[in-house]
Length: 311
Image (cartoon, rainbow, N blue to C red; front, side, top):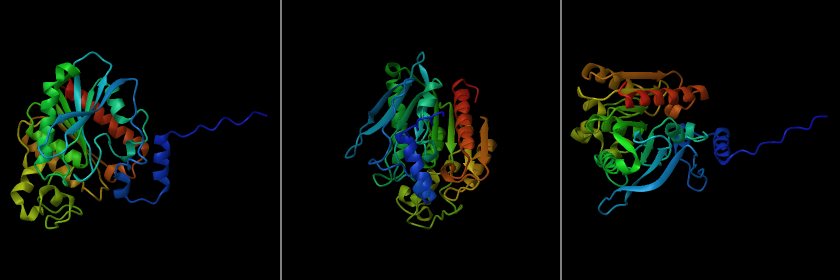
């Protein structure tokens, strides 16, 4: 009689994802980065050199801002992906691409590095620390530091693609529209309009993440709300954009991406690629695993093409 094959012990990452899948959690609870007490330990991929907690800016009276770097084992200088995490501008971790990628091994940043990119995952000040435009200033500072130290790191910031999800997607859009010379932007389900009601968002509510980001309800701070809205910052020299959004998103309405894509197509000469994903909620909640993989692969291909000047 053939003995049963040995049972493979689940990895820490797999156990974490399995636990989430069997619990009755809301989308909002699912997308939050795991608590440090149970978060998987950082990976150390063989395909990249990883530098964690590298300071890139000092903030008077605040914590130093840091980034993590994945440096590929390929000839330098390498093109750069600058990744911006989500979390409603209120929370989140720089090394988290969303709950649907937390069980991946190798993880998403190791995959991007294996494709020949350097990856920088940057902190930015959250809304409990400082209001807009502080986080956008932080990301400009990250680009400045990466450019300053690029020769030492083997990074070519002249071929930078900014990639963000949710609140990080919003900041990625703003950075792409305010920092000259970026090669492209990948935006997953990012808010683009903080001035008008869309989906669950109302500009009069003082308790929304948008109001906390701005320091007051958008309806009472209209100039700052427009300044913080990528839709209001579109211009003819915008870089290529890839916008991907779930059609069933109940947290950031899909119209944010469709409106931004339309404005970019009307104003910019650069290519704009829009993909709305049927049945997918925020953070790709409800989408099949194969769809999430396809979203990632399409995003990486787009970034690779932009870095080659083929966006």
